[in-house]
Amino acid sequence: MPETLLNFKYLTFDVVGTLIDFEAGIKNCLAEIAAEAGTTVDGEEALALYRDARYAPNVGLFPDDLVRVYSVIAPKLGLPAGAQYGERLRDSAASWAGFPDSRDALARLAKRFKLIAMTNARRWAFTHFSRELGEPFFAGFTADDTGVEKPDPAFFQQVFAFVERDGGSKDDILHVAQSQYHDIGVSRRLGMTNCWIQRRHAQKGYGGTIEPAEFTEPDFHFRSMAELADAVDAAAEASTTSA
Figure (cartoon, helix red, strand yellow):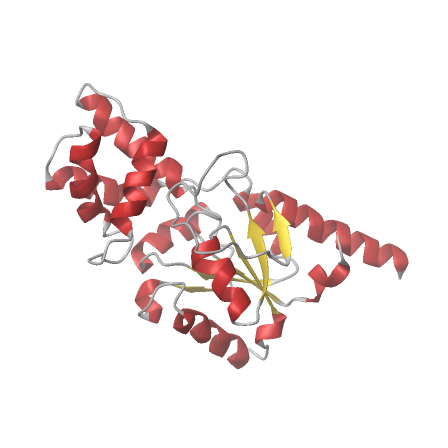
């Protein structure tokens, strides 16, 4: 892997879907509700319905909006109605797990870079996510902090301003994310270097993430966070050997 991976001072991260397995979290909670009701749900169907409901015109901030989302998708999945179930889905975010490789990869990367979280989730949820990931972040930006959600460029501009106050620049940042729609496309338009973590490489479709209007070829492409951390370590070793 090119040693250019070592040229960055900051790694900015999408969190939900890149580091935290929100698809498994949603499917598991819905499966539990279904089991209690004596039925089952198809996980991929549930994610498709979630995706459509989540990107309706009247959405709220994530994951609070899961209360509304549940009311939309429950009838289509044959699940029981009731605000308590939507609240249960919302509250499940506090226990969503990171991908198996996330915590270790972030710990390794934090030895070389300042890690900055950029999440469309609200601050209360990010607090749980960060704890699950081992509190690896130098800074964290949430929808509560920015007042907007990605892919709004204003979210990124606030991070750029923070990095500038820290003595860096946009060129010092590698943006790491799984969402083509929320992150990879807009980061390219803003002139950032980006890294696509293709979490669903073994699955068809976009799962719970909205499909982009067009695919953006990333600067770096890995199937997992572990692959990114391995590539950084390999680049560092190669640099030391050639010195």
